[in-house]
Image (cartoon, rainbow, N blue to C red):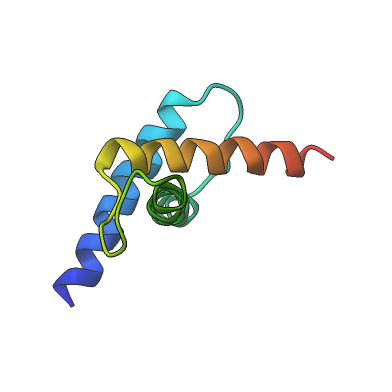
Length: 82
């Protein structure tokens, strides 16, 4: 249970940082922010493994997670404006 709460808290912090660092309109809501942070971390982990930055089984660092969340926010804006 504590792992799940930890994932939610890290997702919230990463999502808030990504929203703060990315200019322009962002999706509203705490749940959306948490999901963006968590998915950004997953994108950074698997993207880093594909690029050879991380080995299999390693997770992305905090900065990588924020960068992954920023990429997700930018992609969400591109597809939602159409």
